[in-house]
Structures are given as C-alpha cells and as structure tokens.
Amino acid sequence: MKLSQTTLATALLGGVLVAALTGLPVQDAQARSRHVTCESLNNRYQHCRVDTRGGVQLQRQLSSAACRKDQTWGYDRGGIWVDRGCRAEFRVGSNDHRRNQRLTCSAEGSGRQLCRADVRNEVILIRQLSRAPCRFNSSWGYNRRGVWVDHGCRAEFEIR
Image 1: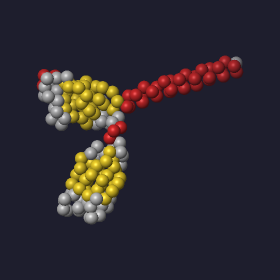
Image 2: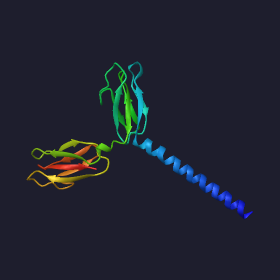
Image 3: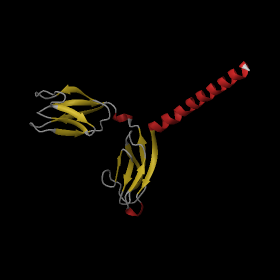
C-alpha cells in the first residue's frame, strides 16, 4: 500500500510540475507581443478587447480608409478602438524599447510644461540643464501622461 501511495504522490507532483513548466513559456510569449486585427465595419466605431498594458503599435493597415492614431484608431486599458473604416493589424505587448527612454523637458518662465511620455514605473532626473533648481514634486514630477516641469526647471530625465 505504501508503494502505491508514493507512486501516486510522485505522479501527481510530476504532473503539476510539467503543467507549470509547460505553461510558463506560453504565458511569457503572450506577455512579449502578439498581433491583433481590429476593424471598423460600415465606418462604425469598434472596440476590440485585448490587454494593452505593454503598448500598441499599428503594424499594418488593411483598409483603404486611413488609420491615424488618436483620430481613427487608439487604445485604452481595455483594448484597441477603430472608427471610420480603419482596419489594421496591431502589435500588442511589451514595448521594451520604451524602457530607459531619455527625455529633455523644459519650463519656459514660471509656467508648468507637460512633456508627454508613456510613464509606467518611475522617472529619474539624470541631469539638470537649467540654473533654476529642479526639485521633485516642487519644480518637476511625473504621472501616467508624462513628465512635468515648472518654475524654469529644464532637465534630462530617464523613464524606467
């Protein structure tokens, strides 16, 4: 009886291990990138549900109607949207080239300036370029839309 219980336990553990190991590459490949086709039929708005956390890029336009970002196509957290006849293949997934992107942002005078960037994690100040001080949460900061500067701060930032 002890031998069959040991054999059963070994078989179950082996099965769980195999399932876990074979599942990882598939999930990892999907997390990297994949292609999705989204199409506006009869010139109508269409929302295609897909995980867009890794970014979206138009890979190939399939329609004769123009596909222009933020005009006839775009994306949000829930997926890709198309409109006015845009039909295209999009690359969805990790955009690792966005990691460690450098950006120079400057505030003219005392007005706040937003330099748009895809900020997902953190931003660090690499080099101050202005005489005016650049102090975090005082004369510079960031949010999901980008890096902002104020009070004459001009600096080079790294988006991580």
